[in-house]
Length: 273
Image (cartoon, rainbow, N blue to C red; front, side):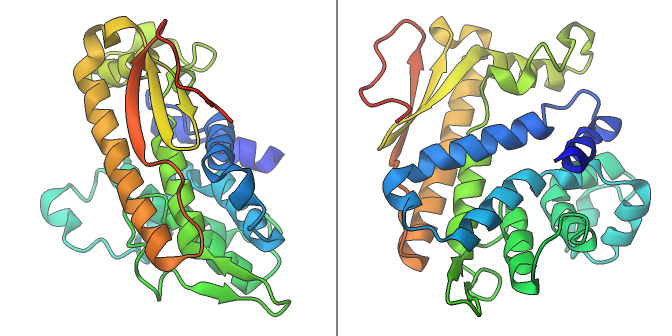
């Protein structure tokens, strides 16, 4: 835990004004995973799946804070496709930001002994779940198979990656830019000011059996346009992840819609079960 805390905090060296990707974010994501899964489906998860999901929650953003040496080493192993036709190869910050899921997967593999990952099968599942928190094709049965372990358990990697992707997407509330972590008065880039302001306008995220609710300040303040964009983005991720689970796993994602509510309004019944 101490090593992970130090590793995750190192992202600030590359992204000093970027929203939180520290241990606090990882803990929030793990909490959201638990809330999305719910008690009934949690009982369906075996110990190996629980282990993989917990490790992936902690490791999923390690790619944001990799060293220059690891950046150069890992870049030789990542298929960037036509990315550099439209992006500057020398822009390390942008490249890491856009591909940190791939860097994170390679980081987990390189330092598996540090994290005491017990087997190649567990490592594969963790790496794929880390990669799967954004962009990768969770319908790909080669990349995201059901792994049969020697002991008899099956690790359903598409489900774990889908839950992590959705949980990461909904960590958008004000504690993502806590005053404990940032002095927002020092922000100078307009995009950073807007991003931090949008998070601050979302007071918390409430998860019920069928709904993901963004609780926002009255009227959304000056950031309602950005909040509506976030709502659409979360809805798209929810639909995609739900389809993956329905078509490829014995699990389901219980939540079916995303809504916005203003502070002071009556919350929907059954919140934060």
